Amino acid sequence: MSKIMKISIAVIAASILTIGTLFAVIINQGTHKAGDEGAAETAGGSNVENSNEEETHFDGIGKKVETVHYKFNKALGHGSYASLNQQDFNGLKDMVKPIESLLDETEDELIRKDLENALYYLQAAQSGQDTTELRTVHRILHDLDFHINGPTSDNIEWGYTYLGDGESIPK
Image: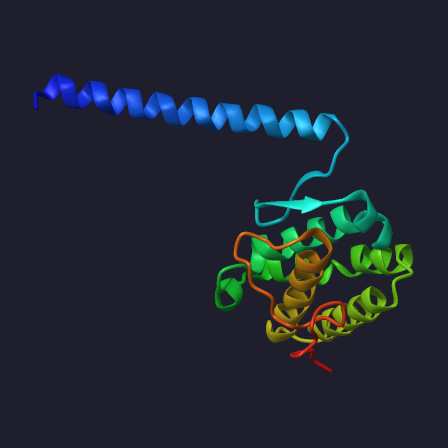
C-alpha cells in the first residue's frame, strides 16, 4: 500500500471520528435545551445524569459541594498530601466558612452529619500541621460530591459519608 493511500485512509478515519463527535455534542445540547434530564459535569469532569428531582432532594447544594471538593482536589488530589506547601495548607484551613455555609443551606440530616464531620476534621487541622485531617475532609467532600452529583472520573467512593455506605466513616 502506498504512502499516499495510508495517509488518505488516516484522514478519512479522523474525519469520521470528528463528525461522530460533533453529532454527539449536537444531540446532547438539544436534549439539554429541551429541559429533559441532562448531563451535569462533576468535579472530575465526567458527565452524569442528574434530574431535577435529585437536585430538589439535596436542597440545591450540588454545585457548591462540587466547588468546595474541587478546591481540595487542586491542592490534595493524586497523593499531593506529602508535598503540600504552607500557602495551600493555610488556604484549605480557610474553607471553614464555605463548609459552614453548606451546612446552613441543607436540611438533609445525613448531609448535615457529613458536613459536621468535615468541619470537625478541618478545625482539627487548624490546630496543627498534620495533613491527615485535611485528607479526611477531602474524602468526605469527595463522597458527598459522588453521591449528590454522581460519580467523578475516578469512580472511587471512600465510604467516608453517612449519605453513602458509611463503612469507613471516621470519628
